[in-house]
Length: 129
Image (cartoon, rainbow, N blue to C red; front, side, top):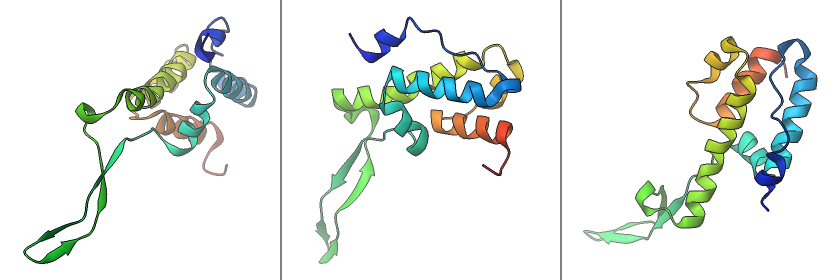
């Protein structure tokens, strides 16, 4: 049984701006219980698979090795699963915000769960966190 299956019987805490600090604590516990990797995604952003381009020589000039983001078609199965974690986390956050149309509207355009979370915190806590 995966951690997400274990937590699926626990209802996602609905966003409550009036009791934001309580909601924040509850949603953080839910997120941690659903998958401990989600906390890292909220702090650092989504996993981005990368590959190394080896050093080469062009016209006698050494081009050092460097890293680039992989194309989705290059992802290995474990990388696909790690990339999908951000989508699952975005879904949890949007589900929590469903009843607050204004807040949902504020974050719906965000491209990652980290961006969503940062916007929620900014709107509820202000810039002095």
